[in-house]
Length: 347
Image (cartoon, rainbow, N blue to C red; front, side):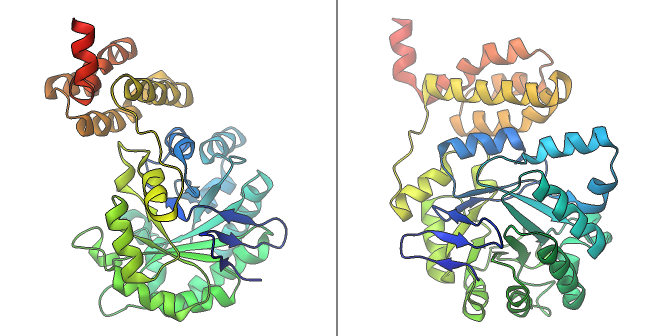
């Protein structure tokens, strides 16, 4: 069976065993160091069709010590609803082993990374480097699909560079091997994140295959999501950097484009409560010392969007005292986001 798009804005990923319905077709992209389990949980609470874990290196995960492996499993959120686990690697054996491991841990979907442009990943001949070796890429895909009964998806780019735009060909072969859905970032590897995502070029992949194609790249809001779908003909969208500091944006897109309920976007005290809960979740998940470091970028995005006092933002992002951070959040988030409430309290 192959994946299909129904008239009800639902993508169905069929597996040998249980499949998964993605409703709405608005997905959270995997972003290293950003879309960790605490952040994915915040996004999921607002509403997302699927969230994807940060990429995990297959061989390192399989060969890790038991204690490290347990930590990796926790970070992946195995068993979390509506979550895909993304794996990367170069060797079919380790890719298959990692796929079995995450399926046994409760993953609902396995996503194969063939789009990461980072030099460290590409230097290991993984990620988007595989766009230059489609035959080897297919060996990896065959190994993963053959190792598990849950749906396998693929994330990649338009190609290596402007002279190697082979995404349509790769996806055709991936679909024939059993991949159920593909996400295309509308840039080549050599573009990294420069310039504009080419949503029209994603349309070449849509026309070349019968499996659902998800458009990714520069999708920041409902308007850009609408344009991406219109220009590409894709079945859905994947949001990455657009969700930074705005975990509700996927739910907004789903409401505006797919008729889902409008989310309650937090402002004022509600925003303070959300950010505080996210902050405390990060401290609990990573431990206080590491959690404070990981949280800084998220706090920066939240406070930047709220357009609060720049001086308070700097203190929040450099403080080594969780109590101080929590105490300053109202000043950083409420002052501009909910001036009426502040005036009422001042009176």
